[in-house]
Amino acid sequence: MFKNVKVLFPCLIVLILLLLVLDIQAGYASIPWNELLSSLFAHGDETTRFLIVELRLPRVLASLLIGIGLSLSGCVLQGVSHNEMAEPGLLGINAGAGLMMALYLLLFQNQSPHFSFLLPLLAFAGAGLTFWIEYKLASNKKKLHPKRLLLMGVAISMAITSLTTILMLKMPDQQYAFVQSWIAGNIWGASWTSVLFLTVSMAVIFGLIAYKSRILNALALQEEVSIGIGVNVFKESRLFFVLAIILASLCASIGGG
Image (tube, rainbow, N blue to C red; front, side, top):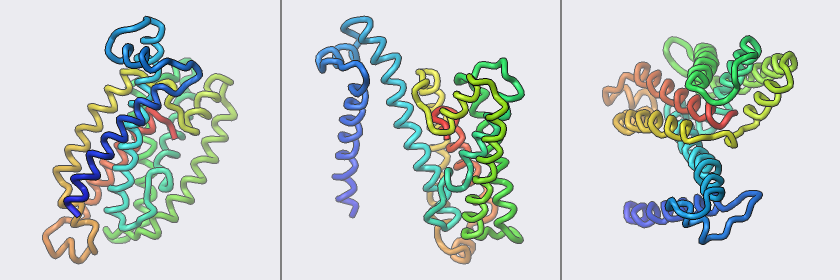
């Protein structure tokens, strides 16, 4: 199996690079391949370079980082909760982030809805509060019930989505359009600032998860087995839940719900 991984991993890297180039090429304006390659290496027409380097490339890289972050967040949630269906969207984490975003725009309508470093904090606050409520309702005496967590997530997510819709109806057209686009998922406004922010933040969280990966593997076992090999299940589970929520919040602040 290890030999297969050594062959498969480089193939996947090559496939990702190929798809990135194809994604950059996709768009309303068709760009010849020679101009595309010239623009990527700081040559070529200024208009083409702006279209590729300033508009398309940040969007493509942001979408790649968001996909990586959400997949790792779901992997952590599944490992800790022992539930193969656990993921940020199903547990209402993204819905909580969207509610906080809508509430912020409703209260501060003069603020610009574009990316700022306040958006990840708002997303984390909404996602963290949502998951804290679900965790409290799904746990009993410091023990988490995975099936109950999933059901609570679905129910609370629907309630939050309804509340967000009510708030959106009270917004001006510009804020309404932004929140609606954000909830549906929108990476068209991605910039190099958001890409850099995602890269640095996710690199730190990835490092923490990789450092504690053995504990995550132990938590994926039965709780009695984890306790038997010396893992503080309650403490470590909370840490991984927080890391998963931060990851999902970072991705939601750039790519929406």
